[in-house]
Length: 201
Image 1 (cartoon, one colour):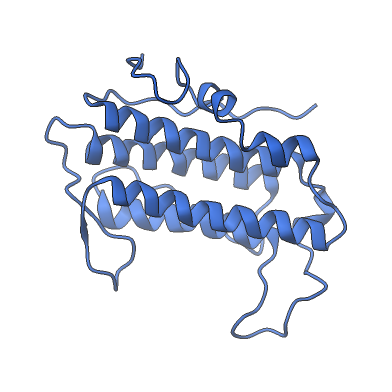
Image 2 (tube, rainbow, N blue to C red; image 1 turned 90 degrees about the vertical axis):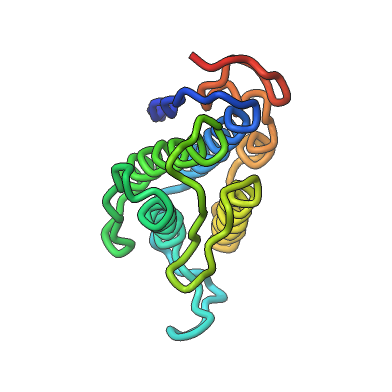
């Protein structure tokens, strides 16, 4: 039996958009946790049979993909909301599935805090989103959330494909379960389903 990670603490938010953004990111994080929970351990550091030699275009391991996702979140928080506690980065060469789950849970909580300040009203300190040091900042808005979700969905697709290539496809209940937003919404700490403006505790 796998152990569940604690749900993301829900910050206090004043707007429907802010609440929805935090709930969406919590559901997004639940998808990541589900994948790691159900991955065969043999896939964690295995190389794809179609991997290219090291250099540009090389294929990451599943461990490297999840540590990248966490480390990019840390960068978003560091550049966009440096007043928040920035989680420690993970080392892709030594990170275990358990460490990845714990790190992702922590970085998801910081991203939720960042989104709450950016989209939750009340004059938070997050007014711009910096996705990288070389990138121009964007005004804090729904585009910020869309970018964050798209980045993670891209890498989840890589994880599913790589597990399949390695001969250990994820169970159909998992790959279909990441589309069960009503369940994910509640597992992420929401008190109702998507589209319902229920105040958070």
